[in-house]
Structures are given as structure tokens and as C-alpha cells.
Length: 238
Ligand code: APR
Image 1 (cartoon, rainbow, N blue to C red):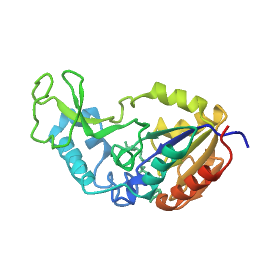
Image 2 (image 1 turned 90 degrees about the vertical axis):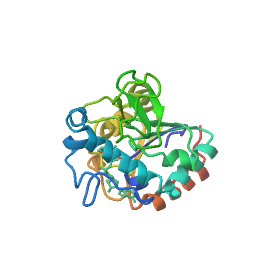
Image 3 (image 1 turned 60 degrees about the vertical axis):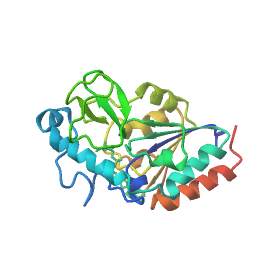
Image 4 (image 1 turned 135 degrees about the vertical axis):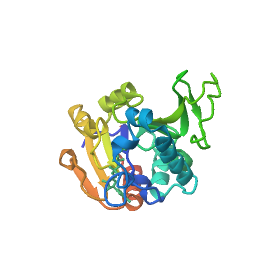
């Protein structure tokens, strides 16, 4: 086993499921009642702005009702106590990692608590609703504020930084993601290509489960704290 210094963690909706936030796929998932193309595309925003703004207003309201679970807390503890280098890349648009105490994080699919002005390009903190179409607080453009969410067909945030982290990772861990959406679904192969060990922690084998050297199946609230304890008690820091 090689020494361990750089750990890169990819998280998805499954890590927030036990906090009470819906995942996207599967029965009862967020997409179950909607077609993706009706909500999460630039064309949908163009065609039916009210529906898209309502959808994300409802998710922002749901986020205010939930708290981080033991999986988020364990990752925050790992960041605080691990003397190597840890980066979390999340596909989640919630802020539960940060509320648990995580500081080094990339939200590659955007954030619910952020707004993007289509007129001036500014991103700004956002806690209220968007359905009433308030003007941009910076450039004052009307009807230009949209959720700061990366829609299908748009480029995820900070891909350069993510590529660099994948290239130097000693260990890549994927938690609570179905592996259905690229580019995140391909990170395991990139990390392996550069020589990282790979581990999946998920409720069921993901679409790309085959690519992971090790797969542990179960709820994140149990698997993640167990794995964090293992890392912190190991002597593998280089
Ligand atoms: N613990 C661990 N894994 C869980 C749990 C749990 N308690 N509950 C569910 N899961 C797993 C499911 O088995 C599934 O494999 O989490 C995964 C969630 O998959 P998706 O709903 O597809 O969510 P995600 O992979 O994050 O979706 C990726 O798709 O629509 C887009 O932009 C959206 O970021 C999202 C992206």
C-alpha cells in the first residue's frame, strides 16, 4: 500500500439523504415528478422561468429545515484532524458540508444559497425566493437573477482545479452518488489513471462501481464515520 497524503472525496445527493433531502434518481427522487429537460436546462429557464425558479425556491426552503448528518460531520472531522491534504468536491448544491465544519470544498454544480445575474455575471449570496424576480443587487437588471446551479449542458465550476486534484490524489473516495452524470462519473477513471486508490461508499453499487478497487455498501451515516476512523487511526501518512 502506498503512502497517503492527498485524499480527494466526491460527494453526491446520497450523503444528504439521511438529513432529509431527496436524491435525484430512484423512486420518489427529485426527478421522479419532473422531466430533467423541464427544469434543469438553460432552455427550460428560457421557456418556463417561473417553473424553474419555483422548483429551486422549494429546494432552498427544504434546505432551511434540515441539518448535517454524521457523514457530513465525519468528513469535517477528517479535514480538521488529518495532517495530509483533503479536498471535497461535491455535486450537491446544499450547504450541509459547510454547516458541519468543512472548509475546503468545491461545489461543481453550483449552490442553492447563491444567485447568478445573467446580465452582469455576478454570483451573490442568496437566501430568499426568486419567484418574484427581484432586480440584481449589483447591476439592477430586471428579471436577470437565476439560481446559481449548473444546468445540463453547462460547464461545471472549477474543472481545472478538480483535474489538478485528481492528478495528485493518492486516494479517491466517492460517496452517495449514482455515477449517472458526467463529468463527475468519470473522475474514478481519471484518478485511477494517475495512480490513486479508489473507494466507493454508497447505498447500492453505482453505475461505475466496476471501476472502484473497493466498494462498501450501506448508509453514509454509518460507512463514512467508520472509514474516517480507519484513516485517522492508520499510519499511512507520508
Ligand atoms: N447513503 C449512501 N448512499 C445513498 C444514501 C445513503 N443514505 N441514500 C441514497 N444513496 C445513493 C443512491 O443509492 C444513489 O446511488 O446515493 C445515490 C444518489 O444518486 P442520484 O440521485 O443520482 O444523485 P447524484 O449522483 O448526486 O446526482 C448527480 O445529477 O441531476 C443531477 O445535478 C444533479 O448533482 C446531481 C447529479
